[in-house]
Image (cartoon, rainbow, N blue to C red; front, side):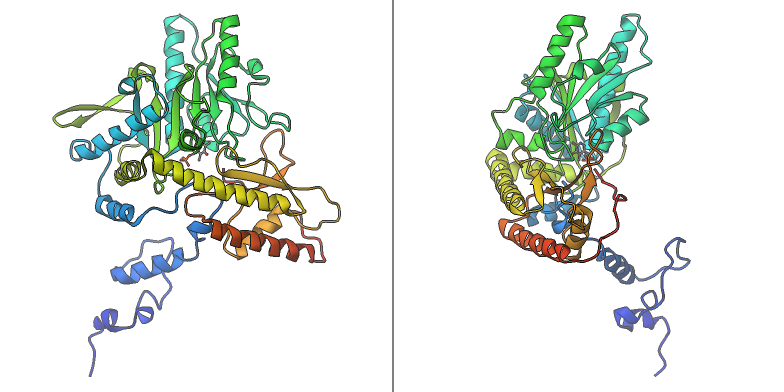
Length: 458
Ligand SMILES: *Cc1c(COP(=O)(O)O)cnc(C)c1O
């Protein structure tokens, strides 16, 4: 029997079909179509070469949600968050979420707070920074003073989004270097960086490099004293990308949020310890007057208009539904339970890692469930943390090593981020693997080449 050549697409076994038997062009749009299942198989197979997300202990971003969330996601992936008029309930759920956050973070009057969702903390930080800048400019203009040289003061260990903010929006970045005595921005020496052009100070709740909290209250005290001396009223934006969803549950008595009058805005990543899949952040201002009107645009909503503040126009609405689902599903008690369990795993890992002879902990996982460690100096050791990172990668674990920021760039650390989904049992397997790899590296005769080429994706 002679087959119609067209049949070969549907009858041939999947890996013997055109498309699968030929190699596909990566950089030129293919001339012809292919079957959807063939295209699926090609994309699916290439993505198998990515790391296993659950074993990625480099990322802060959620890699686990309950099956009901997966279902909700699949039901909502076609919703555009900006179409407030078409999807008014998605818009309503966005408001429920930031209102809950305003309340959780002790806004004095949550009904009079203002906030929004974003694609992540990066966009949320940009919005927080833009509000600081515009407020400062408007105040300067009203006083008849120049407003062309704004600066923002922060630790040298800020996340890269703050460098981007300063670069993209023409703000001078003033970095306060960290040191062995001052591992975070703690107010020490801060005054020297402040002047009438300072639009604000960033305080980080959960420094990306190490997971440590910056003492927001102490920083505010320095700014209070500075105001008494100079009359300059400098506000704080708290970058709570991770910590703003840990501290309320794990350290409920720590004062870091809107309880401090100087804290004007707070951001968090819904997709970090907010326990939602990637693509979601939040920013909240303590009261609506702190977000200058001149930054707000209107989109149509139920025949009227709705104010919006965002860098993007279209973006997925599904993550907003997932956040609302997570808030309902966990509640305060559930978040507390999840974050406490995560802290316990971090504690276990840090204790075990501290027991290994070559290591010293840089910090204890007492703030967010993140910690870093370094190698004890030993002239006879012929391996580095980069080598250990490579060896662990062979087992599937992704545990980055990287240099610390200014003024500690000659110090290399390795960091673990513990997230919901890394069970104590899996953590024990990791310790077994670290032990085996240390032993392997110790027994290797030759000196490995120096590795200064690693880039830290902070
Ligand atoms: C992760 C992180 C960011 C950036 O957040 P994204 O949600 O990844 O955009 C900003 N600041 C800190 C402290 C972070 O940990």
